[in-house]
Structures are given as C-alpha cells and as structure tokens.
Image 1: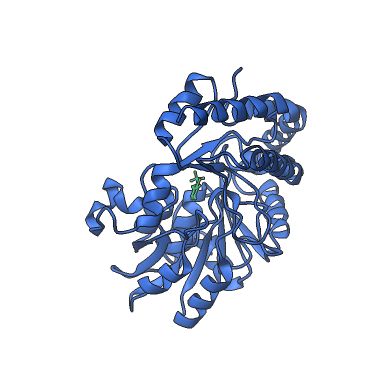
Image 2: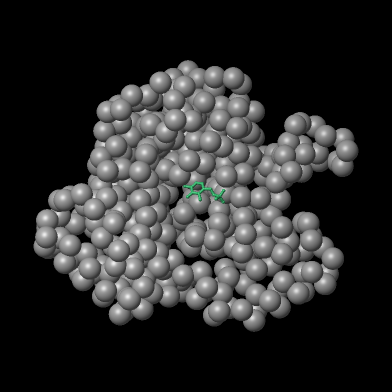
Length: 371
Ligand SMILES: *Cc1c(COP(=O)(O)O)cnc(C)c1O
C-alpha cells in the first residue's frame, strides 16, 4: 500500500469544478492583480480569524518580511524567534534588516519557551515571533505579557496554523499581526504561492498595505522603500472556494490525530504529539518523537514500505549554516536539538482513509517491536 504524506491531487479532484469556475471568472474579469477577488478573500480571512483586517501578499515568507520591515528596524535590532521552525522565520527577519535571536522550545510542546524569550531580551530587542508550529498555538498569554512589559511587537508566525485557536481565540488575532501561508502543504493550501497578514491595528494595516506596493500610498509618490508582494487574484479566488472547506478539513485531521493517539497509547518508544496548550490544534503535521531506536531508521523503514514521512526539522535554525555568523554552538539550545533528533511527521491529511491509517500504525508498531 502507498500512503503519501499529503495527497493534493485528491483535494483537487474533489473541488475541481468550483476551482475551475473561479479561475475562469477571474481570468475573464481582467482583474488579475489586486481587485475584487483579493478584497473579498481578505475580508473572509479577517472575519475567519476574528481580526479587523487582512492584507494579502505573495507568500508566508513575505508576510513575515513585510511585518518585520514595518518595524523599520535599525541595524542590530533584534527579533526573538524559536530555533525550532521553518527557515523563513529567521530568513525573513534578516531580509527585513533585523537580527534574529533564536531561543529554545518548551519541554512539553514543539513551541517556543516563553521563559527563554524573556531571558533573551536585550535593549536592542524590538519584536517576538512566536510560531504556532504544526497547527498548535504557542503559549500566547505569557508571551503577550512579556511583550507588554518590554514594549515589544508580537508577530505571530501562523503559517502552519490557520483555524488554530489559543483557548478560544484564533491565532493571528492575538499579537500585533498574524502571518499566514497558502503554500500547498498548509491546511489552507493554494495552487501556488500566497500569504496574508491579519491585524487588529489600523496603524499596522496602513503600513503593510503601503509596503506591499513599493511603499506608495499615492501611486508614484513612494514614501518608503517597499516591495512588490501581492496575492494574485486567481489564487485569492481559488482560496475563497477552499476556505469554505477548511473547518471540515481541520476536523478530519483532528479525527485522524485522535485515532493515532489511541493506536500509539502504550507503545513504548513512540511519543505522540503533546497537547500541553489549550485550544484547537489543527494538525498541519502529526509529529511523533522516536524515543527508542533511531528516528532515521524508522523513517527509512516507512519509506521502504511506501509511507510518506518527513523530518520537521532536522536542524534547528541556530545550527543552520546560513546563520553561522550569529555564533551559536551545538548544545546551546538543548531542548530543540533533541526534538530535531527525535521528530518524525507522519501522514495526517484529511483524505487519508482508515485502511491507509491502519497500515501506517501497523508498520510503525512492527518496527518498534524490532528495537
Ligand atoms: C511555510 C512556512 C513559512 C513560509 O511560508 P511560504 O508561504 O512557504 O513562504 C513560514 N513559517 C513557517 C513556520 C512555515 O511553516
């Protein structure tokens, strides 16, 4: 049996007609950059995450880039972010002109440790980027309290977490801004790149709308050096179709997660994803920790048996060569370094059927017995 990590073709087949109709309508309208499709989708997302506004942009990476850029960082200004995240969290910070300061994860989740954030604050700190990793919210109350105390901006990296809540509050509505990605592997995946920034602040909204169009409020009278970073109308139109299905997809992911949790109960050596943070976990990934035997050997075994799986993430950002100039040493962030050794994400996509899931469970259990 083959079980991919994600089956984008199955999702497309289910929605082929409304997607093609949305594409045709957008193309026929001639409004391909900005225009009504983008405006409508921005309003839908703002309402979905309980934010006042949403600003479409070219990708989740650009959502972070524009947000950090909106702070107008001076050379040496620092932005605190978890090391255990996708590269863009750190890369966009540097491209926006700031210096990332990487901190460790919580012991009992894959998310950033608020105490580690507080310890990393210096007079140069401008912002915190909590990442809601794998579909689970970061621990936002202590993070917001730290930000308030030290007068720091909070840029939520919610790229993996549309639909996720912290308690009953949707992520993306808690910090100053929320950055979302529509990369195809995200819970709301587009048919190409795309991103959006949500905010409750008119001041942030204003800055971001200007930054995404070359820094010009009035055309050709550019106020600041901005970017060309827009969400294409055709992608906005397709995403509007898909957004209506997002809650169902999240529910299917959660049902799959509950079945895995049950199946791995008492399986010595496999730690299921922690649920330390209250709220709606939308399982962009279902990430186990391999506590006995080698994670890499389990990955190889699953691949040999036709099961898609990935390591998110094999290298925490403080140990990635691109950030070598920041001077971190191996062993400096021990919790996430251990997570990087043990983590393995297995199929959780909404269309996975029970035969496929049963096969994944059996294949893992059989491997565990040999360890
Ligand atoms: C996917 C992702 C991004 C970047 O999104 P793109 O749309 O691919 O640019 C940023 N941060 C995290 C945590 C992500 O998972």
